[in-house]
Length: 231
Image (tube, rainbow, N blue to C red):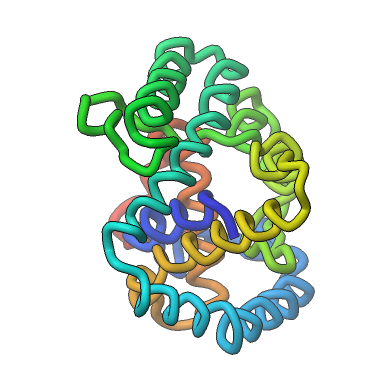
């Protein structure tokens, strides 16, 4: 689970439809394998992660929960900064580093999102988007154990994102595991309401939502108009 998962469900669910990607054999040639992994992830979520997350929300005051979300959002701005630089988006990179500076300094290490209140735009860039920006094709759809929906390109990007994350580079093992677990729970908490929008075949719905959301992000909102018959 990571920030990209939050983004694709919250944004992608609003535009997804089962017919949006007609050539399923081309985009999902490994469907049998993917469905098996999807069922594994779904079971793990149902019997472990979701109950833990619901307990977390039940005992955590809203301001504290929001502070946790802001803290991880501040960390994600660091990744966005480097990826905007790699894409040559200097203005966006400047906004990213300004957000990190403001929120870390005046927002108590990012617990308060003072940058948004100051009108500094937040971006959501990762290495998979950077590869796509420079023309790397997405490749087939792929469901990863624990991490969920992805594709060949984004899987490679995820390796880079995880390896370069400040959280992954915490030297103390116990602290790193604790922060990672909290990040997973925080991400899952943001999806509790959004998942209610899933209809029909969960696998197909989530796949199509992910693919449309990633296309939207890689192309900075410029996506193909599929036409009314697809919606």
